Image (cartoon, rainbow, N blue to C red; front, side, top):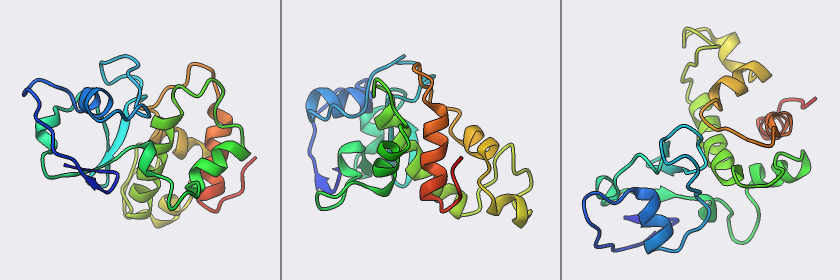
Length: 168
């Protein structure tokens, strides 16, 4: 598989999760093992452009695929705009969920830009609803990522900032 732009060759048992392969075999500590049940989103990575819970994915399923973790989000030593916005808007407290939140937000913004609907936007052809990333829309699209510290307002503001919409 290709992880953060680097081809990695792993020999893993078929039952090894992608999360365990990333952390234990490749030493990438960004994706966190929170619930190990796909409920918290701390392990969110981007696989082939789509956000997934790495704790629920088997590493062998991603042979030959592109995986991006928080370690691969920054470009040439510069923070990704979402990373910088999380800092600006205090979108983290303890930081445990932050890597999953940021990976999820990167993919979520791409989904939104591609016109993918959510429970808030309803029908994908409703251009007016789809164009706006309201607080409610962001919260719905990010609902798979939990923050025990309650930094949700900062997270929403950071995403709105990067999306070019006015933060509170």
